[in-house]
Amino acid sequence: MKVILLQDVKSVGKKGDIVEVSDGYAKNFIFKKKLGTPADPKNLNDLKLKKANDEKVAAENLEAAKELAEKIAEKTVVVSLKAGEGGKPFGSVSSKEIAQEAKDQFGLDIDKKKIVLAEPIRAFGTHEVAVKLHPSVTAALKVKVEECR
Image 1 (tube, one colour):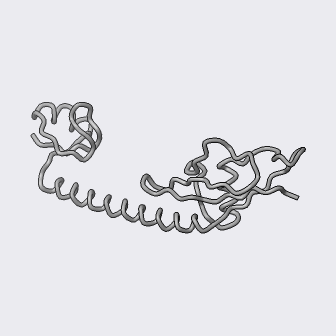
Image 2: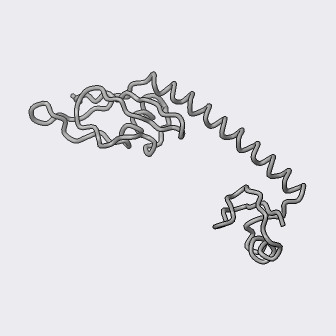
Image 3: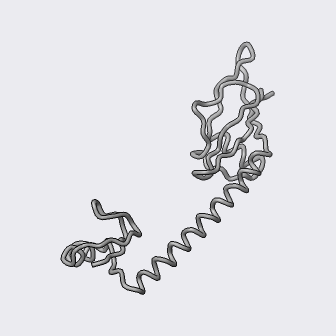
């Protein structure tokens, strides 16, 4: 019996796959636990439409990420830190502070989890920080750390 999987099933297939399983396995396990539906023409058409819609949404998300990356590349976020003795910064700048300053200064809504920092910034000057907006889109955000007066 051909079955369209609604969820991943171990050793059978992934969500959205059309697989061939025995009639008893389909009726007693897959259908009872709502892990799949029969692969009849109506369900196959629904699956085709859902996949087309998912591709369209993924393309729109990619386009939006590219547009946001262009906006981010043009901007320089300015963050102020207090200076300690000898002109060294007192504290550091984390991804949370960068995200907050980007929102305050330019209205850019960047998730702090998408800002890639190996470690917090602990020096004055201009630094480039990677922002991973999409699996295939990464933007470079300039962060200027200056001494507050």
